[in-house]
Length: 409
Image 1 (tube, one colour):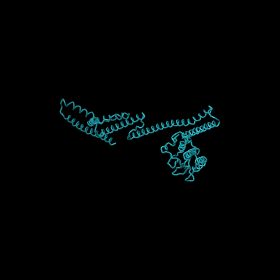
Image 2: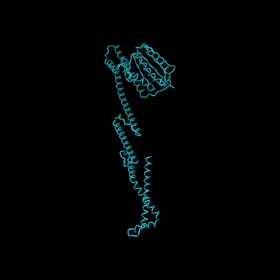
Image 3: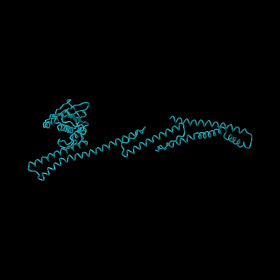
Image 4: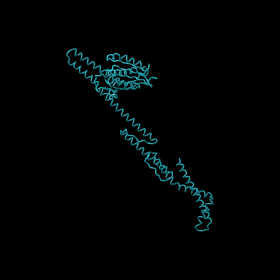
């Protein structure tokens, strides 16, 4: 706005200067006309005297001076402003080209006044804008070529939002691609794990059935022994298939049938149902509650499956400790359930992978411990779909699996 006022003042000064020059020239012309009229007759002066008299007689001296004054004023004003007007036209043309997208156009700086200062600032702004757009364009080209870690330098003004949006888009795209790769690796791992775990019992079943088919047994007792082993392996195979189906069904977004349930009564009933299994292994389950009721919103059928898997895991690996402790409590809007067994310590290197599919602490796929490697993965999936949390901690004295769920309002 200040520069615009200065430009207007400049043209006003041109107008005042033109007016003063016009008045001066009219005064000179008036004196010259009077002088010509006073001169004596001569061949050289007569034509001028006649012209002056004709003008005065035809239109009068005042209108004549007014016409001459306007013509002189316009002529002088145009002569004084011609350079500035031409410069303004040049700047206008440059700005038109910039408006059409040609940001490489250079705006000339021809004067040292406010107009030149404005042109210099515009030229600097265009250079900065062109440089910023080149950086953004170069970054986009590299991102398009697959370099998603390429960061566009921070910009200013509205371009800052553009660069931030592009960087954010590249980050999201990178995460999406990485998630897709993890999903592909996870799918391949799943196929590998399933193939291995299905093949192991199936091989045994086919081996014993082939022995029976070829009559490679001594008597009926050995035949029944072969049949019994094939049957047990078939049961293992069915258990693995059922657990795999259950895991996939939950992991792919099984719809929940939510209702309010009390974890205290829920866990006490679960402990009673496991009494036969506990007696077989010589173990005792102790339930400790922090308050009378701990209500949560949950799918009871799914939740009991998760707790059964945690209970089976505690029995399976905590036999040496003779006790399983279940602690139910609530604090800060969360319900907490802890399963504690007193068996061998889980190596710290295994803790991060304990809830992965087919992972076994013993580092092999042997069925000697009776697990399929899916129980804890299923438990975690069930806890996750309930917006809960599951964790494990282990030391030489005990191993604790803790689940947390939002309390019902």
